[in-house]
Length: 241
Ligand SMILES: [Zn+2]
Image 1: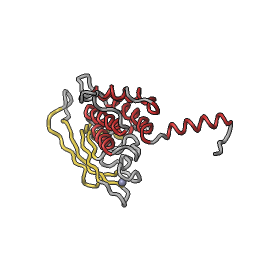
Image 2: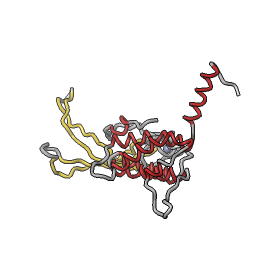
Image 3: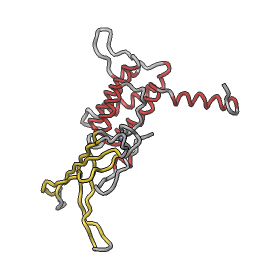
Image 4: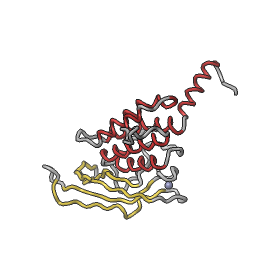
């Protein structure tokens, strides 16, 4: 599943549940813990607007009683005067998460994915909310670990380290089709380390691309589906084996 852009960029508020899926059990939803949503302003107006900067922290818990994972959310807020039918106007405050730990999974990580790559991707999920540069770097490290898992050469003959691009170009045979995808992920991850920067949208693109690569490297579901598709077309009907 591609990154749900709507869910991760939506504003939240204490009285409204987010619909975020629990990253631990994938069965419950992360709901606000009553009384654990706190906000404060720093008293300094934001630019020309006479509204101070607002910050918040909130705790959420998985709705699945078998799991009950706790999650910490923090970010910024914004209050504004909006029209109201009964009173004419009211103050509405909305909050934008910038850090969610542990974060809902932004893409599917197959169980076959090596643990070190999974850990980096989970760090990327947490950073993706408000620090795209850090997310890009975690994605880049995850890509290195994924190549390690395939035993792709890591060192030069003299003992130095091959660049990530050089390692990606060594992908041949059954994983050659993922070479371009990995190069695109590397380019986006690199941008996270440079002044040109990487946007949140770039991080989402990198994760979407990496999700396909994860399948190719560690599961092979899409490849098996393509083979089955070709067999069905060739047989002009169901394939019995
Ligand atoms: Zn859960």
